Figure 1 (cartoon, one colour):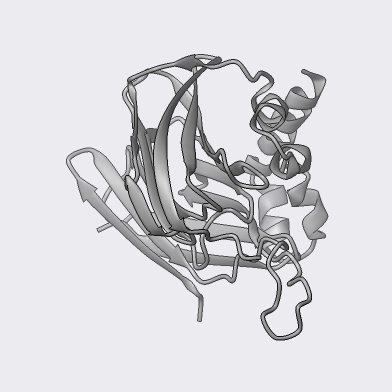
Figure 2 (cartoon, helix red, strand yellow):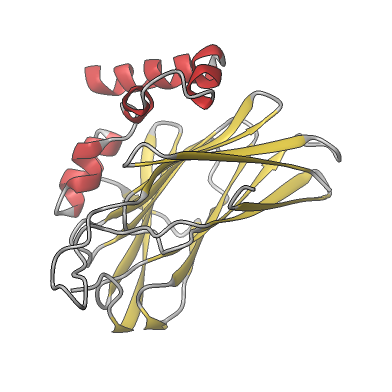
Length: 157
Length: 103
């Protein structure tokens, strides 16, 4: 919990502008900014560790209100288009997880007040697995999954 | 010359932003096909999108995002002519930024 507060604080100081501007101008070392990047969560080898590090909990309620748009069969695992959209109210974060990857946590989006709960990106998938979208709304976690069949893995090796 | 392409379009009260960044996005797990050595990790860790000093979205990524990442998101409250600024920082400390206006 303390960690989560610290992160919020860091984020707050960034948005305050002066720090952001200084970083933009190359005056500060990048480490200062990257303190915001959750290394433990992004390097975690399993989903529940990643989720509890990132969101503070690994239990999420399954919700049909989260829509994941991804191909049923992805020919090339290096480029799998994924769109996550939800009509849940009060969404503050959307996280995309590829359950079969060596480091399952792919991307996490913190949404500002004006943002619509919609993100679309392209991810890599090592093998046939579930794409999990975890949405934080009103401080509660919701999730939905979609299985994607991968014919050629996209994580090298 | 920036390597970030941004398209921001308004329809109704929602602005849709689409952007393409040019980046190798190496996970650090891939082996070089010639030398057999691991290619060092090189990927974007953070992407921040701002409009008029207001943060619309702040993304944290791992190497699991595809090479030359594509990102699309929507927000409310924009106006035609407003600036959209996108900045990324990668794990090797490089950073890049680009600005576009809402159409």
